[in-house]
Image 1 (tube, rainbow, N blue to C red):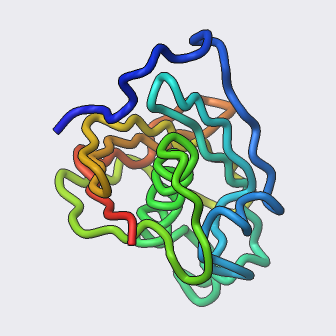
Image 2 (cartoon, rainbow, N blue to C red):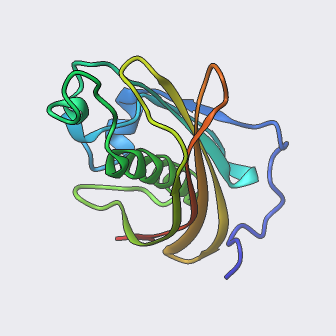
Image 3 (cartoon, rainbow, N blue to C red):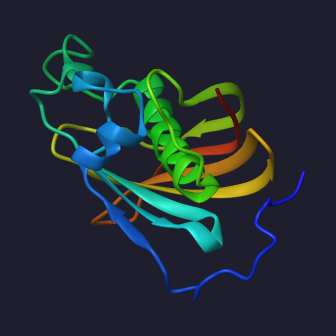
Length: 162
């Protein structure tokens, strides 16, 4: 697999902030399923960061360790997946319409390193490692923004654009 962009890219400093309204247009997720607040994408570097501020009122904490709620691991994986899908969509330049979007087909090497509690502010740092047409291989690390404490690492996340 290799990156498809053969033309000379703009300056490496080029990046784009994507707010939640734009994320609703790029991703086939709405409401509680849109588990990402905003993203910063560097299309020419094939990487980006997703941002999420957690709160006790979020559905992900409902009933999960009452009295001392922690965010379930599968929601951390979803946050990473949405970050990767945003990078893939923006860097591919392929318009997404209707129910089209990036689907996860494989995840390997997941490690949970720390608990996420209500009020934690998270950053997901994701890199597109390889791409071939509609397939993309990513790595991702989720950290707390304040302490930069690693909470989750995904060695390989493969998505397909459908």
